[in-house]
Every structure is written in C-alpha cells, then in structure tokens.
Image 1: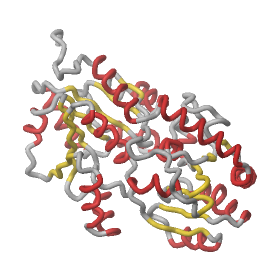
Image 2 (image 1 turned 120 degrees about the vertical axis):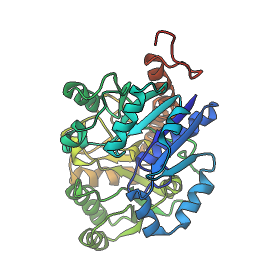
Image 3 (image 1 turned 90 degrees about the horizontal axis):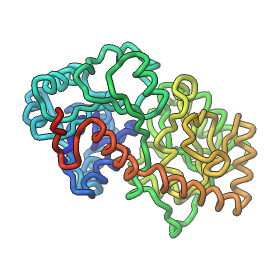
Length: 372
C-alpha cells in the first residue's frame, strides 16, 4: 500500500516526540514492502528551532541516519491533490494546519479513493478543547488516539467516527540494549522543559534526589529557562541540551538508571498515556523509576518493568536501591525488555494499524472492499 503521512515534521525531533514514533512506523511499513512518505510544512517550528539551535548539520545527519525515509516540505503552491490521488492511506497529524485538515477532508468527500485517518498524539483535546472541537473531521474515515482516555474523549464529544486507540511505541531498530558501552554516569533524564507542565515535578523528582544523593547526572532536552538551568547547576547536574533521538540509545547505555516524569495534563486529565521516552528507555535496557501516573490500560507490569514512586523522598530511596542492587537492576532490565518486545514495538503498532485499516474496508493490497 501507499501511505502518506501529513506530519509537523519527520526530519526534526526538536521538542517533537511524534517524529520518533512516525519514523519507526514508516521504517516498519517500508520493511514490509509498503511505500511510506511524509509531508511536512515549510517553516515548521520544530525544524526551524532545530536549525537555529544546531545548524544545518542536524538536517544532514537525519538524511544520513534515516536514508530510507522520504519527506517532502510543502508550501503554498504544493499540489496536495496529486499527492492525495497517489495514496491508498492518508494519515493526518493533529498539528497540521486546520485549513489543510478540512481541505484534505473535502478531497475525500469529492471522491478520493484513499482511506483518511486523523492522528492525535497530544493533550489539546482537554487542555485546548476548542482547538480540536473546531477541526472539521466529518469526512475522515477514522481517528487514531494515542490512549484510551483520549479515544473516549473523542467519542463523548462527537469528534469523528470510528475512533481507535493507537499508543506510541519504541522503534527497536534504534532502541535496544548496548552492553558493550561503558557506563560513565549514574542517572540520565531525557526530557524537555515543556511550558511549566512539569516544572515542579522536575524539581521534586529529579533535582532534589540527585542533590541529596550526590549522583553523577545528566539532563538532555530543550526549552529550559535560565532559572531551571541554574537549579540544575546548583544540584551538580550536567545539562547537555538537545539530543538527536538516534543518539538517545547510546546515552541511555552510558548511564545506570533513568526516570519518567509525565506532564501534568496526562496525569490529571488523560490517565494511561506515558511519554514515548518510557517505551524507548525500557527498550534500551536501562532501569527506570517513574513519578506518579495511572497505568489505566495495564500497559506495563507495575513493580516489575519499572518502579513507581509517590514523591521526591521515595524517588531518592528507590534511586539508592537501584544503584546499589545489581540484582534489582538486572530484574528491571529483563522485565522491561520482555514487555516492550512482546507488546510495544513499532512492529506491533503497524500490525494494529493494518488491523484498523481492515476494519475501515482497506485491504492489504491497497484496494477498498467492493462494498464501498
């Protein structure tokens, strides 16, 4: 089949975690003999910030590392009609311009033979409800929501028909254990600051425990304000700035433990949705300790795949335990890997996507069922 993904950016993962997942899904589709292409807007904020932060070398590095992926930047004169006409399946991410989202829907209504799906991987359905409510999804065949609570939100609000849960997952072509890599630090956390959505949590679960234990720790991510950088320095935490997602597996391998600090909107309004970094960390074979969130869908085996803590004091205790107990580290690594490999890889998500397409009447050959 010919897949066309409208995304904010495939090339840039600067403060844009959906690129991680999309790359893995596209690579898996290509591996299975499908054609997968992405379209991204010229002037996308993620790509512009990446170039401003890292220079054009970061774009060149993507082209080398992901030479098997195809992405085209579109401007005002781009021929969307021709691109849509050549596709069997079109998946439109929720960061796409609302005018274009509606335009693609009209192309479907006007006789487009492609299966049209909307893909939501954010919390705007609850944090900026009007933005999602204002989208015209009436001509979309289905919606992919990256958590069951988000799926239920779409259904209750009447935003589209045929809504399916489609969690993110680890691209295991990238994320896997690297036992040959020497450990050079105790703890690494890879995460962006994110509009104060978890600033208090970062202080409580990361900064203070590291300071108390005197750990050799590293933070990688972007959008850290001056006061946050100052807090890291005062706790003795090194700050490495942006890291390309393709380099994250080695960074995990160089450290003995990591943590998951969810953003507040997911904890409070959309339970059951972890960040993609959690899947990626477990796939990399690093022990993980998580701040509170509700694993409402039973994605993991709590206490086996990772450790839950309730507050900063408990985080301090569990970090001490993991770093001092080799048997505990080994058990967490083994269990976490088992769960990822059995349930949460991009290959599993492609299986799920093909199953959804079957329910929507699209066969694996790219043809629609005769009943349509």
